[in-house]
Image (cartoon, rainbow, N blue to C red; front, side, top):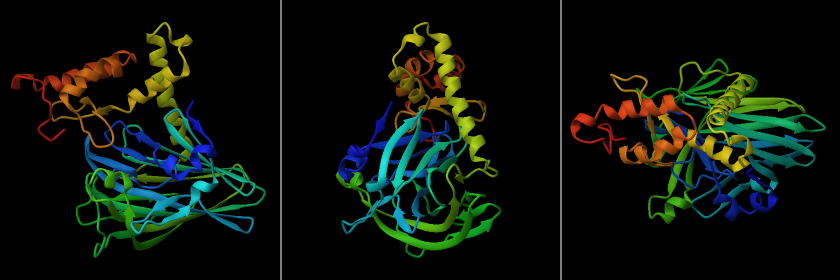
Amino acid sequence: MLDWGREVCGELETAERREWLCTNGLGGFASGTIVGTLTRRYHGLLVAALAPPLGRTVVVAKLDEDLAYGGGAWALGANRWADGTVAPHGYRDLERFRLDGTTPVWTYACADALVDKRVWMEPGANTTYVRYEVLRAGAPVTLTLRALVNYRDYHATTRGEGWAMDVAAVDGGLRVRAFDGATPVLLLAPAAGARVAHAWYRRFALSRERERGLDAEDDHLHAGTFQATLRAGQSVTVVLSTEATPSTDGEQAWQRRQAHEADLLARWTRGWPGAAAAPAWVQRLVLAADQFVARRPLADEPAGMTIIAGYHWFGDWGRDTMIALPGLTLSTHRFDEARQILRTFARYVDRGMLPNRFPDGG
């Protein structure tokens, strides 16, 4: 099991090199460093695939989190800025980072309080859930969450000067329209209070982009703030979505995510006689394989499927798909998906070869 304590989490340079990834089966994803810094232009809590599996658009960059408890105050996240400053330093209170299946889980220790944070995506939807649960506390804990949004191609960066987004209160949270014709982005947390904001946070430093010799600064808009007061055993879930009516029940959403991964493991177990004796890391590979299988609906094949060639920046490529298909689908006993992937790519056989790229740029 992947499980790191303070020996990793508390060392900024070390922890920043460790990244997490969640996917939604559409080509969309959420990703970042385990300490919360944004080091790539591809990092974000919701990188939505608006034209699955492509049209990847960074719509929610992150939640900046503050915690108040027993008269004290803590910032849980971290940011690198273009002037070289790192602020805040929430990793200093990061007790533990682990994976629960494919779901990243952070545990923060603030005085004698323990708070878990976990992030996952809804299978088949451009929706990310961020849940905070108070595991231990002798008094109420107040969480303040600032939602930083954007609306840009995931290969690009943003300069926010002069860009006014439409941020409005809706039932259960906020709605953001980046510009006329943009897909609305919902920021929902019915169990928390929400208030509108509109302030650009400028010049985030993207250290991995600088290493690649690319533009290494980005701006994000603070679109709104959520606040919730919780006691031990209570939780609040923030829903980030480009779907019209995403479910806001965090517990049911978590159960759906668990059921999805349990089904993947059950299919693999039924299909491979040696599964019961396999080491735990093999199960991790089975779950990781699912992150690359995605929908690719076509006009004459609405149930089309494909394989993402790699995260963060690759789409689907015919060569890579055919190479990866046996390991990702046949070895995991996902025969229906394998068949559908072959049917999708077979649409292009009459062009003389399977496409290395789809006409839409995949």
